[in-house]
Image (cartoon, rainbow, N blue to C red):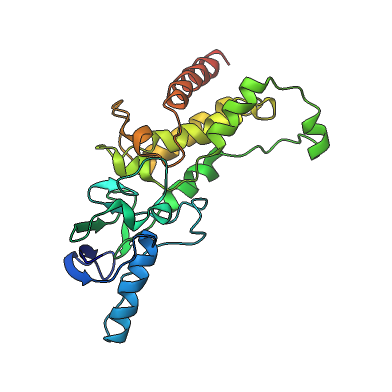
Length: 250
């Protein structure tokens, strides 16, 4: 396969940046998208040029670091996969492919396709944990939890924090990510003690980071590689209202 890549190049967070075109040839359809960029970077390195900088780690769809908008879609044209799981057979010989970073005020570009997603870390630090003594693992396992609830909590916990929901949202909202991290604890008895303070702190931190309001269009769910449901956003609204009512009654 021979392809033309239009890649966003930006030296640092203060640089204006812009797209640059690259030609790549003899690309195997069985290569992953990241392997294709590896091939391009080898060529650039041999020419003495600066390679394209991008995030990656596990390359197994687990870590969520391979954040790229490909032809206008976070993680590319396929559903329920990350960029590292996207293969070149999803494209055609001679295609033009546009590659750019996540676009959000709260995700400033570090270099090229790399963005700073530490805002997600700060949302978790605000309340996405259990700080009370719940006993050891065997003690926690002795608490009976209905399978439906356990499955729903596990579905929320499947969020890998990649940020595709933010990149897909026209308001750059982080509501799907935040709601998933709140839900996975709110659904379980171990998270009940701090449920009200947790939702208030995490929602406040999300807004403080500069993420936009939820648009209710469902773009986040459609582009989420782990198919996190909008149901969790509805739950967070209920949790937040309950927290506010509880605080007023104290």
